[in-house]
Length: 132
Image (tube, rainbow, N blue to C red; front, side):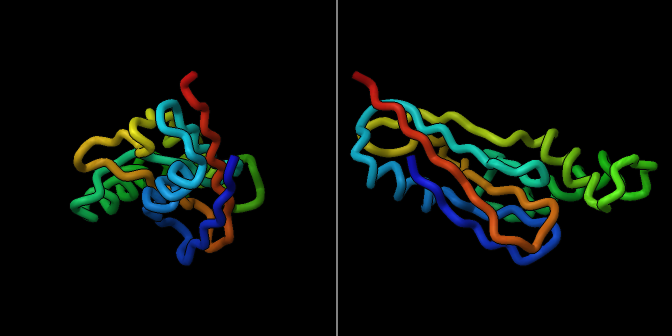
């Protein structure tokens, strides 16, 4: 198990953590198996998305804003209800195969930590299961 710290700088942003997760996989010594990445927060999430065109990330954030507008009559009184709902929509974990000591991702895929209530210092947990 490894735990990473992710520093976010905006209220909402997606941070590419692919390199840091890959480094944790390499350090683990697991050659074949599974990598489970988990966000232990209720106002943040995790997404697998394109890494070649950052407009895709902007588009995803825009679409989430339209699906979960700030003006809804939320009952939660802390002012971050949209962050909780967006976390539910993106999810908080991903399970990825590991082959030859590397994450198996599509050509354009990256792992993004999704901040919806920043800026903050957040945690990202990485668990690895080795094939026997």
